[in-house]
Image 1 (spheres, rainbow, N blue to C red):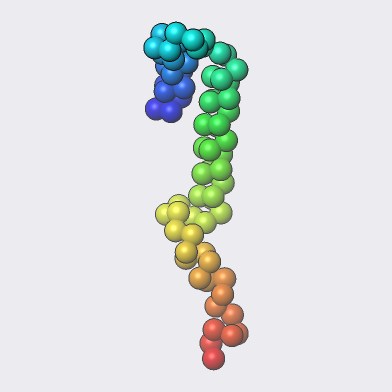
Image 2: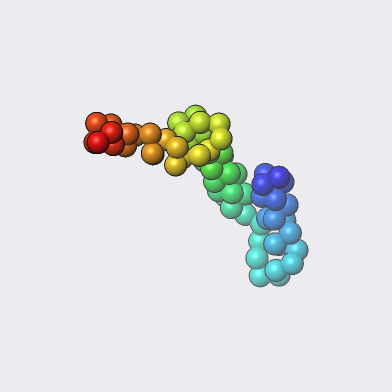
Length: 69
């Protein structure tokens, strides 16, 4: 969905804003940002599990000898 938005937004901006031109570098930056966000999300999901509950990973890290007193 975001890729479609990136592909449509550049030509649409040129049509709706007369002083603006579609720029292939803007499109490339949009697509690179989407790819980076997908990579970060996938990495976080692998690190903290499929449910994405980072609180569980954090709380289990603190249950050492101190937590059992």
